[in-house]
Image (cartoon, rainbow, N blue to C red):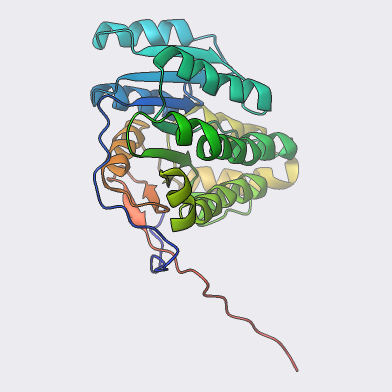
Length: 283
């Protein structure tokens, strides 16, 4: 997938926080924690000495084995699994409450739950976009704002390269991922930061080897041929690169920034122009 992009917007409303965000002694909540990317996020956080991680996922089939395998590599009781459907507001908020009850504070939220389902576009909208918005608001307005262990907390939302460069064969998925990018840009402003001391960063993976790729085989007939061409033309990276990308952006990213992680390369900040709209009209 080709690189993109123009200039990162400069605005008096965009708050720049240059200090490194330390990971040790922090507590994270990760949704979609048992997916291919989610598991690598968890491993990367543990490798960087995070105090604790709440793993939030609707699928608990592999939770016990995954946690036991991690405990063999990482000492301490630092993992806490919560089964929850992120599209259910009460279950989502309960996941926040259980995390704080268990670890006593919360510093990092990684919204990573996602699906690619063009047959049931309402499901895609609900999981990828609406649940991400709800979780971001819960983090900003209460659970990170009031329960962070230090001076600052961070939300990281997982978007996609197709949020920057939409594909015609996956229209709903592209729309939801663009919405996640926009959410990060509008919440990552000085006003929101000053009232909450919460930063927000968006990471956009390129093609990645995860179970989500299997969803391309169940596309609506009108999109199937186009999606086949996309799969044939694309190269896919190991999800391990997303784990490394998460740590890099936690250390380096400024508030409201957008990053891509594709083609097995280190995460790189995307530069997007703001308020640059060209209007054409006929008189």
